[in-house]
Image (cartoon, rainbow, N blue to C red; front, side, top):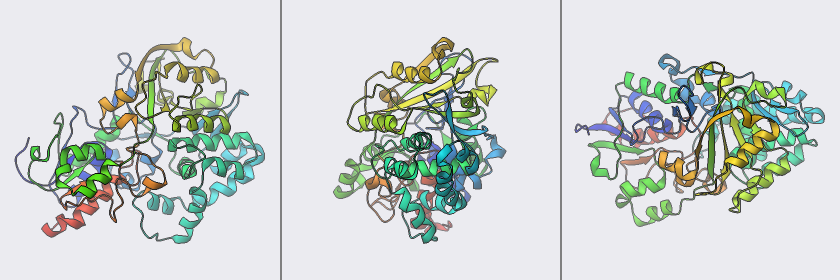
Length: 481
């Protein structure tokens, strides 16, 4: 371990940790990032999980928040190898009648496919798309007084609703309701619970503005580009160095943890007063995921040809069916027909598989810490909308919640969001503080997805934590906030 003093040490080289390091390095700080794993990236890693030549994304695969992140747009990541691929349609949602609903890049094109709900979809989404930049800049951070209160009030009146309630109120037909249900189910909340509608609205809005792109070559390219940019600024990164205690770190004016409360307590709990320790101990983790990667002999044989236009496909049928699936998980049960999120990157990025072959990636939600094998249920959902799917499977890789947590200890019980994102923990994660990135120790900060705005590859948790460190400690040593 390097022995010289740094302005800041970041523990964890996920997208948030790397983003924090870049923000600090751009402010003139000396920065060291320490990663326990041999590879950098956290939730943005790729590997040959099934067969040689088949590149799979271990965690995240499709990145609407990555493309829409104000922070990533401010970084010259294209100079360091990041290239976004935009499918012609961000999302497909097949139905049992053999058709599919599409989230298109334009509001009007999406509305055209919704039949009697075309006008309702335009009324719902057009104002949000017009105000997308203001909305994103507010929601991708801690709670604060908004600069554009009327815009945020209009958004909040719809966002702070249950997805089931909003969809039933806004739409008369099953196509529009199903599309919105699938979007909102990314919240990992029951669709009858607030603020599940917010996730559906934001993901639809991003589809119309930033798209739902994938990185050419795999999600690893995001992490590689962040590291390349950081090193160009003089930052250092070391891998294969687990941190178990603060005294294992080199001297630093500030330490930022790209870790969830459980790991922060294990490393630095003795530095916190009893009240703050109890708050972190009470932090709630959300549902886990069960994930399958496939090496395929050919493309997925979708019954609805529209599914070939999208890299992301939602498998779950109607609003009622998706809501029932997510409700079962909240009750600690495993649905027979789970809502499945599937990515098919090789349709748009031939570098992911040998010529003529393909990769696919899918997961469903499960109760936190589940030990139930959901492979058969996930594949049955794919087969339901793509008869003959099992015939093109060459190999599969399966990761349940325990496997995901072994890969990345931040995924406690398989929770890929770094904690439950309900109303209680939306802005107060990991503990209710005026600045949630700070701790009672003025030299220690949390920059993971366990801080606002939560899960997703966007780097904004790292940005806000780095800003807090600059204001609180580093400014006194000549660094600018």
